[in-house]
Amino acid sequence: MLEILLYIQTGLCVFCLYRIIRGPTIADRMVGLDIFGILVVGICAILAILTGRPFILDIGIAWIILSFIGTITLAKYLENKKLNE
Image (cartoon, rainbow, N blue to C red):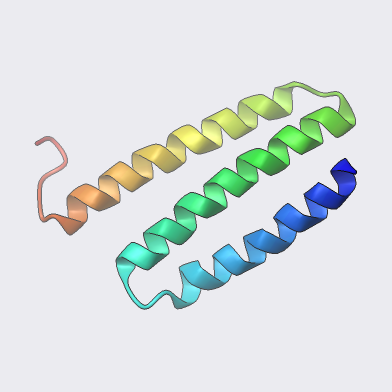
């Protein structure tokens, strides 16, 4: 059952990559990148359960933290504000 979910999430990552590459606006690309990050964390969680290696969850947590920081940085850039404001 978990293997099927792993394949489904991997397939959904392909759709997100399409949105990131072909998004008509920067905001669409940003949303695609956020969803891609969420899917990667889900894949890390499934892999941690399947393999019995809990350190994979740490990789997912690091990924989502970096994704959040990137989203905040891009939002500030789109508002034409400096990063220290």
